[in-house]
Each structure stands twice: as structure tokens, then as C-alpha cells.
Image (cartoon, rainbow, N blue to C red; front, side):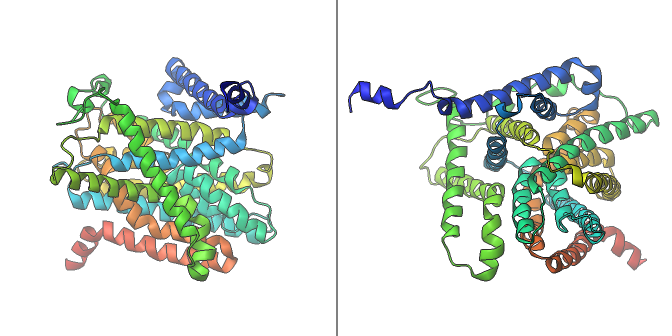
Length: 470
């Protein structure tokens, strides 16, 4: 094939050659506009709403304009949301996290238990509402409430993944349920709940004199050690350091695809075929986390064996990669929401979100007072922000009252991820089991109640058993 023939095949003036790039340009533009609004409008700045959420809302408004809807490709937005979740978790898993003296290993595990138990209680509340509406004849899918912990606790990525799984199971039982839109809407509401309620409660505490205003400017200035650790590879040699970080993230994520594809071809019996396989692709973030930890461990073995003499992992850049992925995920996830089939679910959606916010607020505040007696408010705002939005929301709220991260709250939030994944794994398995039938949903509800009680007793064990001794 000569050069002329190649140029005829590779024509870049076709729409399909630009389609993906145009969608990413739209996401980037929305993110910049959202940041501009948050920076220049005092109300939005004080609300602490993420710029990414504002950008997603702008795209929703843009879609409502006649003739503009087709410019935003909903399937592509869903795909971006899905992969951004997995890539973001891989980047976080590759980081070299060490438990500092101000965060004990047990406190990290307890924080992970708080995360998992909040997922569970959100699932209980959501299921109770959706089951009630189902029996009232409102045609709401009985397991729909389980999307509450995915939207509030996990964010748009998992809300989308399991929303699609729920849509499939609902269709098999003759029910029309827009699971993806339902889950994504809960996730968007979670950001609003976490930010607005968090800020309102913070201002109430300040008026009562329980919180003091602290300057945040110094905490936003990065120190030299934040950018580079000991014995790291140069910033730019034969390959740029950022290129190395991105390549490692993509390599690990490629392993996730190969592993999942391999599992899909295995014979795993009825449970594996009906429950595990359909939702395994939705576990991309969990499998990515495990492979990221394994890849990091292998690099550590190479260093000890003197096969690798330099440090290739850079925490600062991996933080930026994960931050970019989660920002894009929020914008794309919000933009992917469609309100065409949503009208019939407005009432249960409102009740689920409202009760979910109330229960999450009360439960997290109660546990934090006993789990973190020396920094209960710092612990509360960091966990409440994360358990209704993402870890970034938790950090934003925490930074308002602890700008220099002088309490262990920030460290607990960062290091609890693995413990939360391990303790919360049964919830994810139940997410694939519950929608299969109404009976399975009732069983799931019972298991969640027992599991929640076990986790809560574990966190409050010192207080409970101390009273018994008296």
C-alpha cells in the first residue's frame, strides 16, 4: 500500500475520526466553565459544590436546548464514567501510602468499618422505601433502593454500573426501570447533600462557638517533598515521569480487562453465571485496586532484589491522575442523566434521597463522636462528605476546619480504602443477588440488617463492653 492509498484510508475529515475527541472537549469545556462559576459566584463558592458537578449540570441544561441534545453522546458519557472510575481507583492503589503515627492501624480499620456500615444502612433505608412503593403498586423496581449506597457512598461510576444491571433484571421481570438514570441522579443529589448540608451544619457549629474559623491559604501551598520522594526517576529523561505514571495506570487497567475477560469464559455454576459474571465488569474499580496493590508489591520486590534501583511511583502525580479521572467521571456521569423516563420515579427518588441524607447524617455523626472523641467534627465532615459524594468532597469539607490536616482525620480517610473494600465486599455481592427476585431482595434486606449490627457493635465495642463490666 503506497502513501496515497494510506492517506485515502486514513481520512480525518470524517465525523467518526473526531467523535471521541469532541466529547472529551465538551467535558473539558464544561469542567472549566463549572470552575469559573464556582470561583466567581460567591454563593457557589461558599456552597463547596464541586466544579465538576456544576460542569455536569451545565451540560444537562445544554441538553435541554432544542437542537443541542444530540451534541452530547449519552452512551459515550456512560462509557467515560465507567472507565474513569476504574482508572481513578487504580491510580490511588498504586500510591505509596504509609500509616503515620497519628493514625493507628486499628483506627484505620475502624474508619473502613464506618464506611462499610454506612453503605449498609443506606442500603437498608433505600430497600425499605423501594419495597414499600413496589407493594403500593407504583411499579417501582423492588430492589431500586439498593442504588442509594452506590450513588451516595460510591459515586456516579458504581451507580451507573449497577443501575444498568438492575435495568436488565427489571426487564426480565417485565418492569420498565431506568436504573442508570436513577442511580446517576442519586449520585448527583449526593454531591448536593454532602456539600450544602455539610456547609449549613458547619456554619451552625461556628455560630455556637464549637468551631473556629481557620485560614486555608497555607494548606493549599504544596511543599517540595509533596512533588517528589526519595530516589525517584528524573522528571524528564528518555521518558517523562508523568508518562511513566500514566503508563503504569493503563497497564494495570489492561490487566483488569484481561482478568475479567478470562473469568467470563470459565464455568462457575449457577451462582457464577447468574450473579457473579453479569456484575463482574462492574467490579472494574475493585479488581483494579487489587491489581494495583499487587503491581506495587511486585515493584517493591524488584527494589529489594536490586533489579530496580529507582523509585518509579510518584504519589503527587498519581493523585493528580486520580483527581482528573474523578472530575471527568462526575461531569460525564451527571451529563449522562436522562429525565425522559424519570417522571414516574420522582416521588420515591425524593423520599429515598431525603431519608438517605438524614440517616447518613445522624449515623455518621453518632459514630464519629465515639470513634474520634478528640476530633469528632473533623472526622464527621471528612466522612460525611465522602459518604454522600467522593473522597474529594470529604477533603474539601475537612479543609474548611482543619486546613493543615493537623488531626488524623485526613489520614484516616485516605488509608481506610482497602479496609472499606474488604468489609464492604459482601454488600457488592448482594448487589448482584438482590435484583434477581423479590425473595432475594427480602433475604438481602435481612442480611444487611445483621451485617450492619455486627459492624456497629465492632466500632462501639469499647463503649458497649465497658458498660457491661460496670
